[in-house]
Image (cartoon, rainbow, N blue to C red; front, side):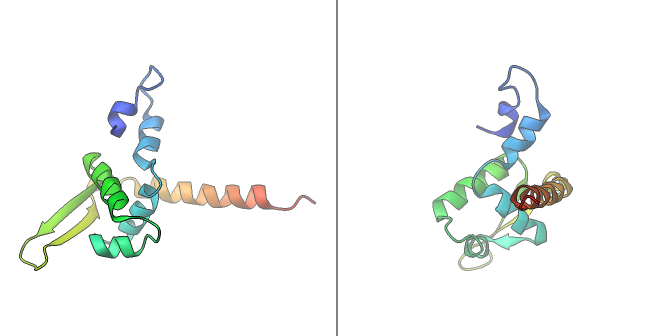
Length: 117
């Protein structure tokens, strides 16, 4: 189910749920972090995700593409065909949010793992 249809799962429109749904999935956040750096080919992306299967990567990429967060580009002038992925303008607008969530997560980890005095 895509993020837009999930936005009313509590019986009301919830933009926060929509945002969280976009990022939900074992590999989506790390895929987005990789694509924040630069465009990547499918095989390059797969190599940076140890433990992620080809099928799972394909599913996660398809969901992000359906939600208009990433764009798939196919260049048939290469043999084999060159398939690459990049953030869309909408996906790029998520970058500051992802960075803030990462900072908050780092703060949270440090806070809850600090030994009590």
